[in-house]
Image (cartoon, rainbow, N blue to C red; front, side, top):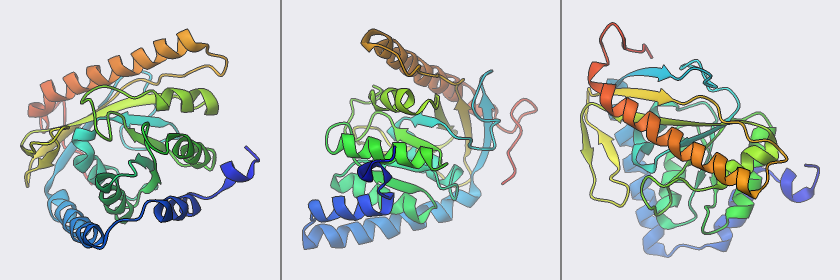
Length: 251
């Protein structure tokens, strides 16, 4: 806060990091192809999807809006998340790897901000970028088990960010009624046309600014538990989307 490094814009950070991790000509061509193919896939399938959102008591969101906070979700559901929360200027931490770069480029075209970095490479700079974004008024999100897993194991970055900013964490998950599941480390889901999705969002998890190491581990455990809880609820109830209890969300 107030330092030149923290006040640097996300656009400047992205340029700096991009120049520090050059891709080969073949990778650049692949990035262009994958980016446009992924973007067109989401734009074509997305309008056919039907969603409903269910929130826990004490949730940050009312199920429609995305108020300031630190949102965490599994890498597996990045595609339905990208469509459901498009054009909201939510800043998402993405890996500086090849895979992370095409995800960043796709979500930028869908109206997200991309903060390059991860818990394994460039993590400190990326957390500063996320801190700058939330202090400027943007909600932020983490694909919490990325960039390479282990699947369904939450990284600790959001806990540190919540302590530093005073904004609470919240876990969410999107289950799909019908999807192609890729044979990747995260078992990424690609929604089939006209499938239904159920978003489940947890109650807020605040982290005090004076939390010690033992307390930080406890809040990390709470985040892990919240992610598992919302995943279980969404998967168990997605088949009921369209019922009186879970009516279709009009978008």
